[in-house]
Amino acid sequence: MSVTPSQPNDPSTDAVRLIEPGQRRAKCWTYFKIYDLDHHPDKSHKARCSLCEADVRVTDGSTSGLVRHLRNKHAKESEELATTGTAECQSPSGGHDHCNSSQPALIKRKRASMPEASKTEVVEAKIKKEEHNLKMWEHACDKLKRLKREMKEAIDNGDVEEIEELEADIRGFKKRKANFATLLGLGLD
Image (cartoon, rainbow, N blue to C red; front, side, top):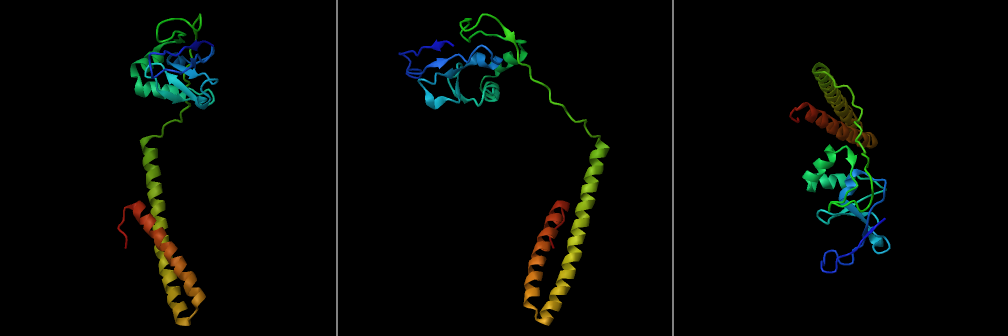
């Protein structure tokens, strides 16, 4: 590991000690250095971009944050890394000061993709879902009618416990009916 000395004339880098991340590394490390933890113990999960001097979070050796930073802030360099076939161990300043050969590039694996459903399958699934929502809305309507009839009987009989239970059930089915009405695009009644 080599140490990058701080430059005393530059206040932004004064007292900052950065080191190269090591020999085995992803291409994106070309533009980043990690903090020397002996001098910066509070920056254990940070890497510094050598292009804009921004600190980027690095967790357990993952380079996702570094790649995202390059893609969002330095599109040209990100594109260059995406098109090169090897990880050039060349610092952005142009020197080969931290290694003496190229390493195989880390290549993004393509994710296995599910076969795409045909348009008719998608339409059929939407129709099934709508039919299901309609059945559930109708069920909630029927159940509300029954609960209201039972409520009238409970009121006539003066059964306070039954009335309280029915009130809770009615509130629940009103919500259910409203939810399915919303899914179906119906107005609430």
